[in-house]
Amino acid sequence: MSTPQKYVEIFSDGACSGNPGPGGYGTILRFGEHVRELSGYAPETTNNRMELLGAISGLEALKEPCRVRLTTDSQYLVKGMTEWIAGWQKKGWKNSKKEEVANRDLWERLLELTAKHQVEWVWVKGHAGHEENERCDELARSEITRAADSGE
Image (tube, rainbow, N blue to C red):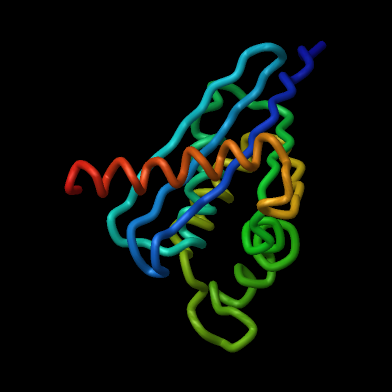
């Protein structure tokens, strides 16, 4: 008999100062009473890339297959993973305009990571008082500020 998978909540957000421009992401992982915060920075990026990297960083932090509820304010991320990605793959990574899918490298990383886990994608309205989403936004923006202050 297999042991039940751990249930982990991941919250993620991305931010960019200019688009493109310097960006950051913030991620919170919660497993029972355990909470871990992650954040990162890129000097020249887009908001969408940071949204994707926030989710990727959370999923990469998992050490074993888990049931995951991933909450984000990015419709791009949620719709990409739940509605668009199968079509992109069928069309050779072309979008509905027959153009190359933006951020394909990150979508492919997400596909690889989600194959290991059972992921439920949840969208929440940004800047609407959702506690974890607000904290993720704060983490993402603090990365941009930290980098600017240190001259990165």
